[in-house]
Every structure is written in C-alpha cells, then in structure tokens.
Image 1 (cartoon, rainbow, N blue to C red):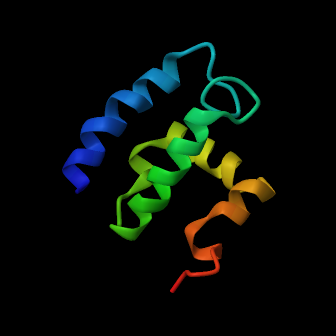
Image 2: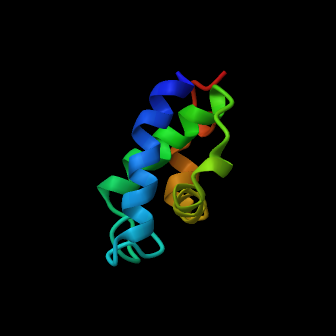
Amino acid sequence: FRHWVNEGFQPLEKILASSPETGAFCHGDTPGLADICLAAQVTNNARFGVDMALYPVIARINAACMALPAFQQAAPQNQIDAE
C-alpha cells in the first residue's frame, strides 16, 4: 500500500509545491473536488500508517481541509455507522 501511495503522492507533492495555483488548498484558497479527493486519501493513509511528513504540502492542505466543519463532519470516524 505504501509503495502505491508514494507512487502517486511523490509527483503530486512536487506539482503542488511548484504550482502558482496552489494556495491554502490544491487550487487556490477555496476547497474544491481535488481537496475532497485528497482528504479522503490522506484519511485512508492514516489507517495504514503512511508517514505524511514525507509530503509536507499535501499534509498542509489536508490540515486546512480538516479544519473546516464540513470536512470534519464527513470524516469516516464521524459517520453514524463508524466502528
């Protein structure tokens, strides 16, 4: 699992770090679909012990997402059927 995360996150980290469009979120200062997808993957990564320190821009964007009530409410652990 970690191998495949690295295969996707390593180039994504470089793109986000170098893109002038990257702001507080993936594409500016308002969350969008890319941020929803990113937050879902980072949440899944935590289940498998992926070290997000390897991806500081992705981790920063995820933290910005998770600071928003909508992302907090949508988190898997906050769903009615969460175990």
